[in-house]
Length: 436
Image (cartoon, rainbow, N blue to C red; front, side, top):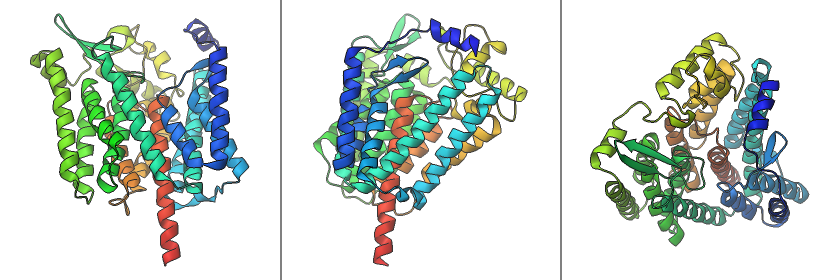
């Protein structure tokens, strides 16, 4: 444990301050009240706060606005006495089991960790995602108002996309270099370009499904257009190559007369993003980047994928059953790979295998499959169900070459969407049962 404590002490800290305390307190109290009176509005607040953490350190852990909202909403639902038996309905239970398995297998890896405190932190994160899913399901079943959550999703994506696109003309958090050219990669409030692409891949299919299957909102037109433009400007190859086909699949599967409108807007936004790319970078540079299988950057402690994947497999062979401990890969990679590289394995599946062994990989594969299979029935006319399983499938494909749910903003949004879809699926099951 002591090497990790030294790393924590040396890391940049964000101490708690009066402004943050006031913000956390306000969010907590507001969500308690909403959880009692309008739980769906509390869920909308969690959606809106997910990309904007205002993170502050308390000892070895952090407190954020989404955590304050989650705890407040849970307390409000408890005061309201919202029934938790809704979690035993088929779709919710299928995913609840997945979340429990991930939390348990992550906790099991603590026993193998050279840095147990980091493994404990990853366990707490898995428990947080599990609680987030459960609270969203219970809240939306208690107050089944999908209009407020769809509006919150659209408005939040607009804000995130605008914040990201402005970085194209200012200071971007990441760049690509091709000779003397510097090509910006935007991220907005997310941790990096790949994370923004992952967030878009979750939100955009839901928004497109609502536009096709319900009367579209003005905010949804803006969210779809700006979201696709921002997606392209991330330069995330896997994000683009999974999200755009996912949107096309939504358009094809949704029985709607507005298919042409949504398809046209999606195409227009794609061309807008491409136009900016061409204006900011030579076409050859764009083709060069997208034609590479390997990572094209190594500065800043980020290694080439071939290096990371080889190191992950090497470490896993040394600890095949329970892995090296959750969150330990970035500290252990130096023992089998090049010095100075400190990052995750750039693959959800390899990361799970090396850090939690076969049990954690099995738990992740089960949950990934459940996130799709739970919503296939009756999904074509239900935007939350259709958007959730297609977005989950896109995320599953994206995470072959990126590890996205490690980041709380991406993982949190995914579990929120799964909770929304599970709640809606439960409502449909209940109505069908009453009808029969």
